[in-house]
Length: 388
Length: 197
Image 1 (tube, rainbow over the protein chains, first blue to last red):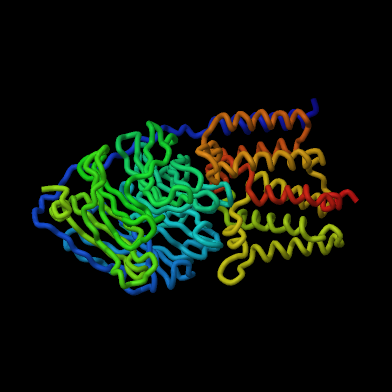
Image 2 (cartoon, helix red, strand yellow):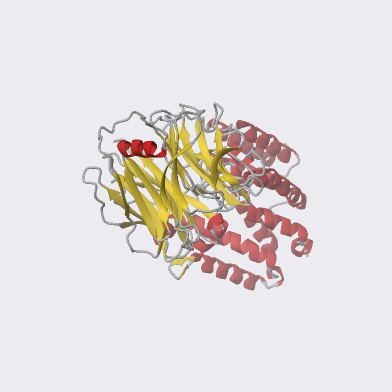
């Protein structure tokens, strides 16, 4: 055996030994469960709405929100001349929990910052979602270098001052195919291990949902597939116990369109049931869901039509085996108006004080905010005949 | 770390561009001085700012980061085609032309959602994937395919050091641009014959 041959063998053995020693020991994810106890003592109903995105940009879309540690609500959306234009940026403002007023709108992220920080040419930004992790606010959003949204990649930036300023943007690597076509839309979950579970989806060739596991350094360390094929995207995921979650998904199926998809994990985030169509319709559009007083008592906001986004409706499901009941319609297009997809991308947030904040895209021109409390919710249920 | 160093990331994008130019353009037929000039020009074009940002921002934005195996191959390919420095044996290139498409078939369709099974997710911390790679690398060593042996080992070590942005072993082993390039060297045997003149 020559010295070179022996040297190469030693290099191989030591290299692989090093990799084996440093192989990450990934523990099964256990969720940090939300506090579902009702805290709203206000017996007076609150049901207020307002356009909150101002007139900085001609078009706006895809609002999401997060409750900050001080109880304020920070909302994010993206806007620009139009959906795919180069001037799209992510905007944000804060709703004060104490005064009920809004802060000024400010730009949270633009493509110049993302280009500089990720050292990649960036053409447009979109779909922000945020989560509070300890004292930090983590903002995930997608960026596109070439092509349409199918060419998206996910980025992460962290704020240590509740979103007033943002740290360096880092790129999440979530696909081996030039890292394109992974997007986000719905709220992340936290785990006891300190990780973030980020609901994500793909829409390049396949249209499917999955969960990304992101460690405390902001690196993707695991993936769990919820669906496959070209059936379901934009998963809205809720934990039902420490190891299981449920997911509601937008229906993109050509074979079985028109119904909202549902799936639940089976004691393992890598093992999800086959897609199950709910009785609720879905016109290939995003839906949002929150838990009320129990893990299986749900409020869901969606477009209540199999093909059109002409309304924004809320449904209530009292228990896991009960039927969905329609309890309120926030929007309904006047029959005389001819607008394509006027109402879309609802995002419902349940705040710690028991109030609800709903955000959605209004005719692409505004982000509309609807603020209601438990008493208003009870009134909606009574009016809908689901409660007495 | 490659991805944390702008210089190294820029150079890896330049390597990608030079390798593609070497493959697609008749560079090998030019005099040595012109070849060197072409390579320097490409490097400058990629590294220097064009507008607000260096050219490699665009290369990286479109194609992503090259895998470690791709970087090794690009260096060897450029040296072999332009300077007749033989870093890999022809048998190794033949094997790579089989191995890479087969691996790509095992990875990309599943990563793009063909089935519930996602082979890409095995790349985060699966010891069996590492074991298979180890056996494969030992077999390559046994056959005296030292370029492939060293390349695979380097990819695994780079992964253990997290030298790229990705924490997934697959991203250190292959990338689509590399797969297409190796496939093109297969489809264009005349190009790979140039260096044997």
